[in-house]
Length: 157
Image (cartoon, rainbow, N blue to C red; front, side):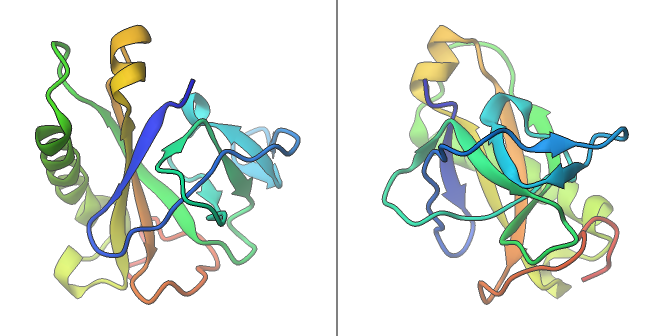
């Protein structure tokens, strides 16, 4: 079942489920070997690439070590309040506001002065209802869609 819908503040990037072997993590939890990361197992600090395609729902992402060029990095996660499905418009608004609130402390720069921009992965209507999924994943990616190398966390970019 797809976990998240993809939404972005600026440029829309699209992800599709990848069918590769699971990513391998080191003792501290960082991705050491590229592979698939289940959408329910995404962690702050995970780096991953976009994949071509035209799906706005993902069940996993192609995780990569942050030391290699990559498209995105998870900089925060948070849960929305329980309750009924809020609808697409309110869900987008809540996710965008929550990710913006967490941006400066995670990245080390004010959003307006930074190179990375905000993308979000958020519950689909299906995962909200069936799995009680309330998690929003805040993702940073380069404003000009260039590859990132290294972590954006506390980078001041």
